[in-house]
Length: 101
Image 1 (cartoon, rainbow, N blue to C red):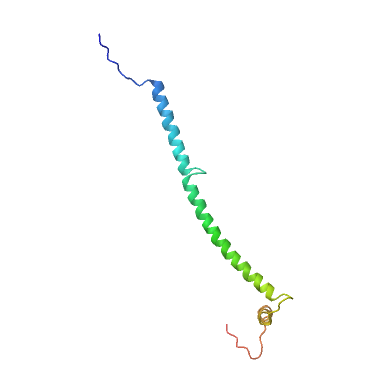
Image 2 (image 1 turned 45 degrees about the horizontal axis):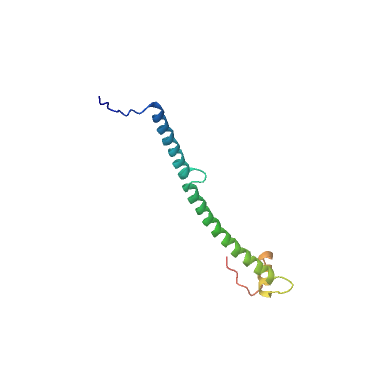
């Protein structure tokens, strides 16, 4: 007698595939949306670019301030800069100055 082998999926096999599918879905979700996922990496890189630009601006501003501080120091005194700062801070002008507001 020839018996036909029928392949029926048992409960354990269905459960196994359901667990594998669920784990695969979880890991795909975590790889895209998780704390260390692809979207988070894009956000971190954008923030890095923004902060790098901000750092460049602050470094330029600091260099300008250091330059002015050096030019007003005892070692090197720029009289024009000193005159400009004194007028700005004290709010004074010479007789021959033209004041534009």
